[in-house]
Length: 418
Image (cartoon, rainbow, N blue to C red; front, top):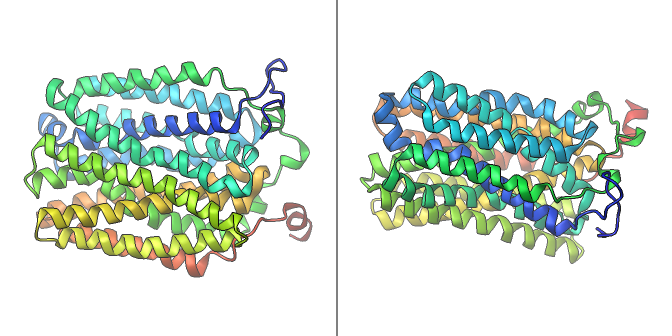
């Protein structure tokens, strides 16, 4: 991407791909800190508000009630309008919603703010995928997505580490205030980003009908596979702090240290997985084959490690298995949207990611509630870990056998023949 291309705001030079991708990555870090604060604060918040595990699961799930279906609308919006402004507006609302979580006093207000947070983050991956599809070449797509997706792990790491320490010193409400303000501060840097003119132009060639996308088997297979990927990911994000404290007897500070380490491994492997896949593509291997193989193998290992972590008798063994599961989550995270960008191309990346991410985030709607019901009914996390592992293993099936060969869709041919 040339830094001399002109933007849509007065002819100033457009920002470099590295600067753009870096800021997108920071935004994802902050968004995952914000969405994960409910899990970090769970051991204190749950008791203070007097809610059960099932009600806690409902509060976590409320984020996804809005976030998942909004992917469909936001995908269409970023394909048609200014992705930069939509993305920035979503982050602004995210910061406000996070700060207001510090004043909740009931389950109802907690659920309401979680829903607001869900809408605010609906532009996060649809918008970033749209901009990456325009600004990054095929042989850099894995690394770009790896940088953005490493924000998932780093966000959890910062939230669990720094957030846990703030919570231990000042309480969970102060933690929400702090990170809400920090998210809003990101907007200062975003105001300097300049997107080249073609990025935001809704010309005729950009208008791929939604029906043409929905007729593709690949989009539905990817959505189902993404659901399986996310079930295990959200299980760990949501329930790991509570599990370590309630089931394994860890202190708040030790829990924060362990979870921060686990999430840091996930972040590192997001970048490493994206970089390695790009190296393989640059060496002459077919991009789709590289990304499909990575998804299948990583899901098999991840599913096994999730189950093994619950069965481990020692704390050290449990942490080791959780680290292996987190490393494979990093690998799959770096490939999820790279696959969508490969299939859809710049013309339809927003809507394709919207559909795929809608399917993926249905796991966020169902998973926390299912886990809460299992924990309340069995008074143990073991069955919940097994269910999470089994669904994660389904990701290997969908990526390997249901999603067809990964190659760019020729939209003009597809629209003429269908």
